[in-house]
Length: 78
Image (cartoon, rainbow, N blue to C red; front, side):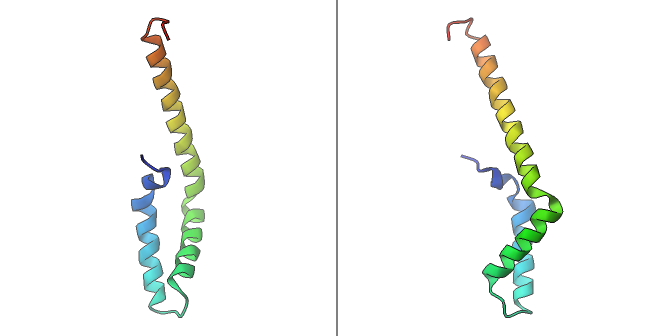
């Protein structure tokens, strides 16, 4: 099963991880803290949460269309 976050993983998660590691080399802060801070910055900058919501809406609309098409193809025997 595909998680909605998987759709954004390559573009978002990898850059966050690399940025956090780079910062960790210059800082005494933990990786966990740096990842959370970088994730918050990237999520705001790239508007990830609204994009995820839009993607969920698209998936739900597609599922509705598929269900309608499946029901129409049965000739009312559903």
